[in-house]
Structures are given as C-alpha cells and as structure tokens.
Amino acid sequence: MLRTICYISDSRLNNSLIAFDSLTLKAKKNNATNNITGLLVYKNNNFLQVLEGKHETVDAVFNKISLDNRHHNIFKIIDTTIEQRFFGEYNFGFTVVSDKNALKNLTEYLNWLRIADNMIANEISTMVENFISR
Ligand SMILES: Cc1cc2nc3c(=O)[nH]c(=O)nc-3n(C[C@H](O)[C@H](O)[C@H](O)COP(=O)(O)O)c2cc1C
Image (cartoon, rainbow, N blue to C red; front, side, top):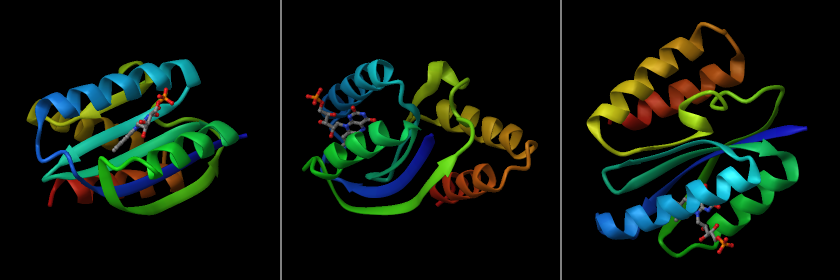
C-alpha cells in the first residue's frame, strides 16, 4: 500500500546554503535507498515537503523528519493512501525545489498532473501552487 504525507514547516537554517545543501544531499541519498519519491520545496524560509512511498517507510521517514531541529512548526496537511505515485517519474523521483527555474518547471509539471484529474493529485497541486505563489 502506498501513502503520501505532505507538510509545511518553518526552517531554522537561516538561509544557509551549506546547511541546505547538506540536508538535501542526505535526503536525496536516503530517499533513493528507501524508494521515497516526492518534493522538497524551500521558499521564504519555509519548507513544503511531499513524501510518497510504502506506508511504513513514509511513516518512519516522517517521524525522523519531525524530530529534526533544523525546522519547527511542522504542520501536516495531507496524510492519505494513494494508488500510484505522482512524483515517481519527475526528476528521478525526488526533487528539491529552491530556485526560480526549478519553481517554473514544477509549476509546469503540476499543470500536467492536473490533466489526470485525480482528487489527491489536484489537492497536492493546489497546496504546492499556493505555497510557491505566496
Ligand atoms: C525539512 C527537512 C526535510 C527532510 N527530508 C528528508 C527526506 O526526505 N528523507 C530523509 O531521509 N531525510 C530527510 N530529512 C533528514 C531527516 O530529518 C534525518 O536527519 C535523516 O533522515 C537522518 O538520516 P540517517 O538516519 O540516515 O542518519 C529532512 C530534514 C528536514 C529538516
């Protein structure tokens, strides 16, 4: 059974590029090993993350992330079972989005995702679009 969790949080990285790179490098490596797909979007010192994968794996990774003091005020927006991954085919599965170009590409991908007319995919698209257009 597949599951997706989406949350937002406040970063404690104080816009440090080195800290951000080290976090995302580790996340990418672990997620490839754990077959976790999704997104990590960073904007205005906030994170938005979408995690997709096996039920127990997503649970375990989210628990780890929740305890990480590099961010706080973690607020879960979506936690639900899914039939298929929405980000499995996008950028090798796990995408870090922090610059203008990546944001533009993501917006295009979300528009494409909406064509499938899946309720959860639409919910995720709306959530991400609201986050990046603030
Ligand atoms: C905003 C944020 C997002 C993160 N995303 C992931 C992630 O997608 N996958 C992951 O394995 N760790 C992620 N982490 C790191 C975890 O909190 C934790 O440090 C890491 O999984 C520990 O890995 P290890 O058990 O291999 O040492 C994230 C941390 C933060 C602050």
